[in-house]
Image (cartoon, rainbow, N blue to C red; front, side, top):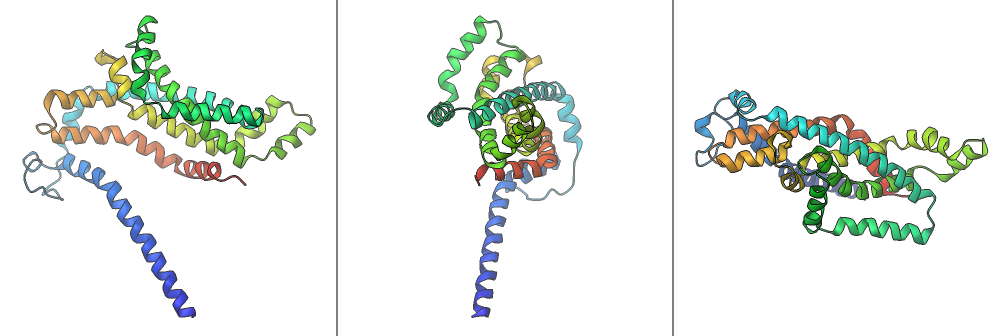
Length: 285
């Protein structure tokens, strides 16, 4: 019996890791192909059948794409917009999520949550025309401010749901009640006790808001018309549309590496906070 249980346990572990391996290969294959294409010699990029490994490493594409495209300007624009959207979204979502978690009655709380969920079900294209004319009338089209407002409108509801779940699950109300008994005001309880405890949830929310703003294309392509304000998502797409994906394939892949690096670096440094924040907010108890 013991041997049978051990064999079953080993089989389950092997199945588990095989499943993880298959999923990892499926997820990482596009990134591998992007890196390999970027470092291939020019004559090997479009050959058929394609080669999985380059015959030699050619790093000249990194210099070419930096000089060929205003990539520095695009990345600066994306960093500015993403940073502001992240800060604004986290501030509003933290205050709103805490308020819903602690002060709103049960029926009103459910109604607020349903409304926020409904905003996430509405396709962005439905409100695009009305929002564009609002920005146009306010003379905020083709500005950082208009783009930031558009991103914040879509980021805040989901960020609020994330941080509200963290407040519900990870911060017992008894801690706040004890602080109030000791003489802490509501504001001091929130800033001195709840905020430090909720750092993992806030960081996971901030990562979501940053990636949403960094990767977004539709709103930026509509609201921005000048090259000086374009983010990387729009700039790279315009590059592909102008020169074609095939003729400049290596440069396109190299630009993709530049675009992916900031998000990967941020995720790498904050991964432990993201996992702990999502895990704590996922289960109440």
